[in-house]
Image (tube, rainbow, N blue to C red; front, side, top):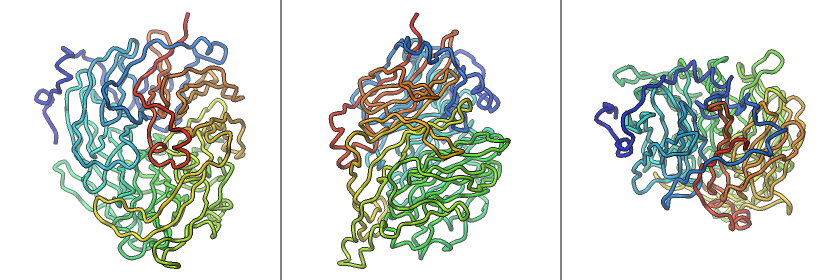
Length: 580
């Protein structure tokens, strides 16, 4: 629904007084501001997802003086996982929190300006904790998604509700946790719910009004649509070819959720969305590649049409969601994209054409494939490592296999960073495996749709997580910093030759971007499972991060969850700058 701004005032807005008039956030600002680093206007810092800032007031020579200047608690009993990346504009920080909350804070002092709590119904079904990964800024709005699959747009100055739109039916398993992104005035979003047999898609809306402009399904056989100003839909072509890579009617509940959101490259005019697992997990039920699951889709934002796709794990049998972010970068006069896939391989792909340029492991143990054929782009499967077909035995449980990486991935939701200075990607990787087997399953609306069982296992005694500097040209790991617990937060890199990342043990760390030497760390009191940001205000460079342990690991982590069950939940924003 679209609400007149003056008639839709949240209780939080009443405490704010009159709003100042500020410059509206424009497309030009979203594209140009990352070049100076003064604001943070988008998830990924820039829409291409590089998570690089040119700021260098804080650098390897003085980072030891980095000290906290304020901290803010999300409060209440609503803690759980905090995976949000803050946005910074006009001296304000906009930060989402668990249970579909958002706060506006004074970015220099931490003073609360307003908060909005979305009223969640009973019966929501998020698979992997009650998280939210961030918001989008456009015009005078801050826009975020909710666990009951809605989009909410608030006035930046007051927290006043401007518009609210339903994405889909939460009772069918749909939810939304990703940060939206802005592309030419369009708000681009995905959907969550792949474990419930939803149909993945990408939506584009008018960011000012919430009006739907186009939808593009990410499962073969489903029709895409465009929408006129009155909301009337017009067919815009089927995604793929019906039943070309899916048997029977399984495509109708085929998964391929776009739950991590996407990136947008203004140089190519394309949005890049990763897609999750096909449904159900039991791959023997769905012979074929099961497009467009476990893929990267390049979508023309003007038309809503798929320009190209690349599938990392055809006929996925391990829950290797391909949602991981596709980060574009310049190399030798070409625009390329890098992706550290959940399946353990790093892919370098031409951002314009989708041609595979390079593919190599970024984790040390991969059992499901021996490598990627660079000519065909397809994995060289190891047949014995696919979980067995239940119908080949007693019909109740297929043969179990030990597979690595685990279904939580060589990399999961935690976004990597790319530095144009070092030309390296900084990837938060995990080394773990799983026992996995298949079971019979039938679709039921709103019920888990897996057809598999599993237990996560450790591989090494001394570490699970490792921040790795990866050269996309050679495929070499240039350096790594190991971590006892699995890494679950994102990465930031800066012009000060620094890389920042957090650990479940509660530390925000900084390392020399060229050598990997850890040069600073700070204990935040709870696990860091969110990506850090940096900005400049009143002549000072600030570093900020959200702290609060949770997410998928304590819920699904098996032996790993037991290993880290001493970690405490939380819900804080920490902000740092150089001490005098």
